[in-house]
Image (cartoon, rainbow, N blue to C red; front, side, top):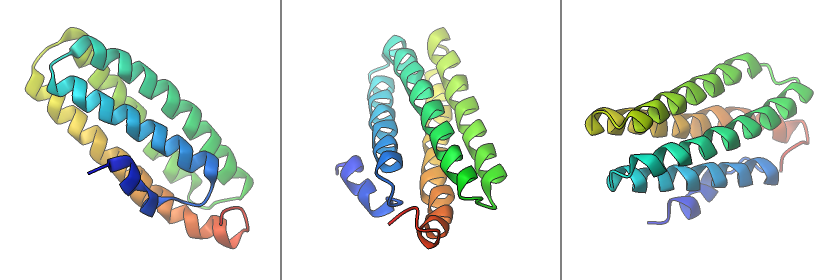
Length: 136
C-alpha cells in the first residue's frame, strides 16, 4: 500500500499544507525503513530532516490558523511541540544506538502522534478554514 497516496483522503484543502504533510510522511517512511534495517546513523540523519521540515511546516500552519483566528490554535501548538519532542527523543536514541526495541516503540508512538496531528488535529480545523474561505 502506498501510504502517501492513501493520505489524499485526509487533505485539508490548502496545497502548501497538504504538500508539507506528504513530505513529512515520506521522511517518516524513510525513517521506518532505516529502523527496520537497524541503520541508526541514517535514522538520526533522517530525523534531523524530519525535525527541520516539521518545524517549518508547523510555523506556517500556525500562522494560517492565527490569521484565521482559529479558536483551537493553542491546543494545536501543543500537538506540534509534543511531536517535535518525540522526534528529538527518537533521534537521541538513534544517535546512541541503544535498545532497538525502545527506539522502535518511541518511533511507533511518534508515528501515531503524527497521524493524530494530521487526522484529528488538522481535520478539526479543516471545516473552520473552509467556512472562513481559506481552504477549499
